[in-house]
Amino acid sequence: MKRMIAALALSLTLAACAGAGPAPVYADPFQGLLNQSSSTVPIDRPITVQQPIGLIFSNNVETWFRYVSKGQESAKAWGSLTNYVVVADVDPHFVASRVVAMLKVHYPNIELVQDFNEAIATGKKSICLVDMQPVSGGVSGGTTTVDITAFFFDAKMQPVTKMSGHGSGVVPYPAWDIRLQPSTDAAVAQLDQKISALVR
Image 1: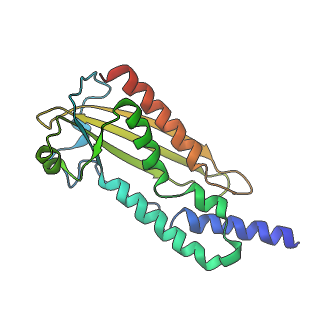
Image 2: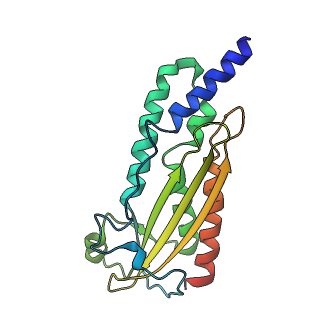
């Protein structure tokens, strides 16, 4: 009986760790950065980027950070029952760090900039704007999804192409983790393949 109660407590902790309240509401990736809809950007169009290249994260990345951080704060109330495997799995920086590591392989000198004004001021010739939209499966049987899109901009700071990767995983029972890491790895791998094939 004690084991059952402990397992149930850990499963409930998962819901707290994964996020606080309803799932995050994501906006258009260009919101707050460009007066244009991202839906108008061609999909998987080949492009030759010029160096140096700047990296911008969409506001949806910050939305995910806030969502997970609130969940981690809520989970602290469980004290010794906290599911540390889950806490590691939903590290808010995990998805972003995986994307940066992949892009660094292609562009070792890529630099993070806050916005297009900073990109221009620092002499960037191309921009990669990355949008991330993870969705936690929450509890056992739910599906966690990770969608990552890279928008490439030319020297005129005009969007030329967008490429996306998708990953998903079913939360196991007991819900020891929400399958964020393997879902992220799958999404990054898909995006990596497209960049390798279409971006020069």
